[in-house]
Image (cartoon, rainbow, N blue to C red; front, side):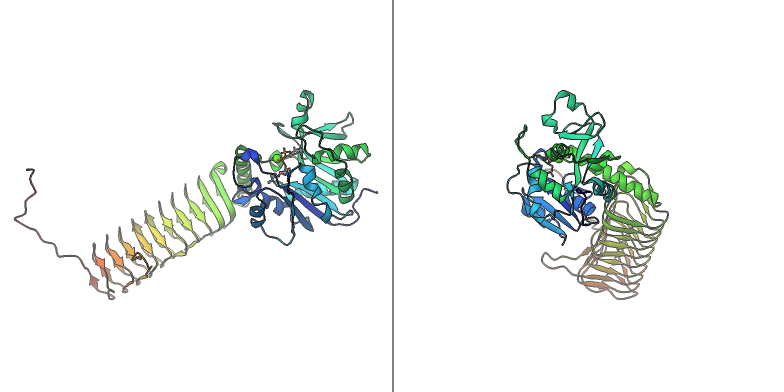
Length: 459
Ligand code: UD1
Ligand code: CA
């Protein structure tokens, strides 16, 4: 068959030069994010397993789009003036071999799946040209698919150019197509800007190919969210939720208990052992690893962290770039800041902030404390309101607390300072010098009562 691609090379072309006026944003449309990943990166990731290289057509904010991603497979193609989707694809033609298969994708259709693209390519391998369409609940804004009485595709009419009868059609163009380099080049050359927007529409190549007796294969994407276009913030929010529901669905299939998938957000990768439970409104960011039987209570944010078996993360806790030991108890209202390591069976209680510190196994910091730049040994007990004063206004200094130490409530440890093993610090002490092992150290003034003192009187 003359229209078949004769080599197995797939060249992806991703359109991303438009401004995205409807986003009302100074950020390029394709740099908006779904699941903390840019729209353009979603599309690149979907195409990557199939393509020998990926042409990304850039224009508006081209430098920031270029900087946002890196891959040897990407060829950046500049479309100086945005004269339409057809014009955008034309810019990539010098990179396209005639006997290759071109996979055209839109930078603002981010949820497309590799599996769907594979099916589209299989169809195009038979006829030379295949289109991905979808039945839209609300077809408004999309190009309508015009079929003849035998259901063969005749053309695509853009919403803005459609008459009332055509506007009734609910089968729409996803924008995604596969076509041989030869056919693509041929019909792009025939495009004319005679439409309401005065643009060169890529969609017009369909009518040209039909006139040329090319049989256009098509298939209807079953999942409409997979091909939703992001044109405004409303679409962006819908895409985010659709994406999150899909991730939640996959994680639940793998055995994660999610109390309410509609209140679950994973903006990165989550790995977990058996019997983990995620309560409502938990946000995971970056790379997070949970051991077995971990409970994450409501309203927690967990970012780039590793949490050990049987750990219990209580409500409203924030954990970032840290490692939490097995059987540890964190929160409620705890904040674990970067470079912290919490030991096994350790406890970090309410309103406790820990930064760049190690808390040994079985140690407890139960209430209202700040522990920063500190090394706390095993089985230490840090009383309510203890503060490591790690900052003199210029430099950060270290605090060391030995195994078994007991720090009385409301004490300040002025770093650099070291508290010995099994040392006890009397409550309310301000410790400026090292405290020895096994001894009671306190620095507060001896309590006294002034017998002649009277409360001041109003004059
Ligand atoms: C386009 C399709 C429409 C389809 C819809 C699916 C055309 C003419 N219309 O409409 O049939 O239903 O997508 O989402 O193709 N772009 C460029 N250069 C340009 C113009 C656009 O790179 O000169 C890029 C945009 O950045 C965007 C993509 O092409 O990523 C689509 O452009 P957009 O203006 O959003 O097209 P739609 O009106 O959504
Ligand atoms: Ca669009």
